[in-house]
Image (cartoon, rainbow, N blue to C red):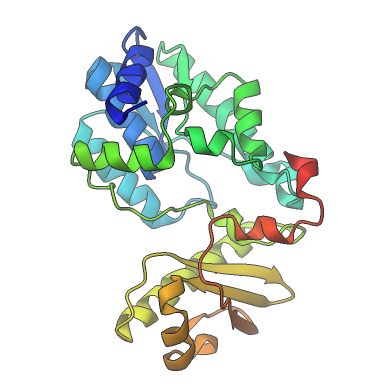
Length: 278
């Protein structure tokens, strides 16, 4: 199918809805879904909801607020408390399931209070077949659904749609939640999430000062006061040669650079039995 055909299918899914609440993380997938809903229904029948918690970087919330305002939609910022869930804090391979459960169980009542029946997420067609997505299953079991995936829109399709529509987040790098930086088995805490956020902000600033503006960057908490840095693969050698990571990455006793560069979902590689959580 062509992009035009898939976008037509997406419109056909959205247009009959009386209203919709979009779980808007601030990323390109949920941003394109939000824009598509506005195109199909009009801004007055669409609500964006960005969950606010220690796992959301402050910069992501600011960007989400700006984007929602540009579309003219109501933007709700409900608080979620995934840290109150023992399964989330324990940080086993199914951590995302507890996070998405908390999210949907907060958004469904919010939608109900607003007179909206449909809560949708930005899961795309590639996400569904990725093989390691316990959060997708948890969200679906609790009543959220996935228009992008149902319309067959892949990651590349989503980027292409964002460019076609002139959306400012078209080239935005992937920005998973802060908990995704913490190795499975290392307990998640508010302090640990804040430490990762500070470390990434400091490292990005240090790289920019060194003339190495980076697109994709992660500081991974491996436990034991050890951090692993991932940057764009093309910049690995320059970072290794020109940046003192121990100084540039505060809050950790030891900092190492991953020679393979940034990889989305790199923490999944450390799971001894990933199939268990599929």
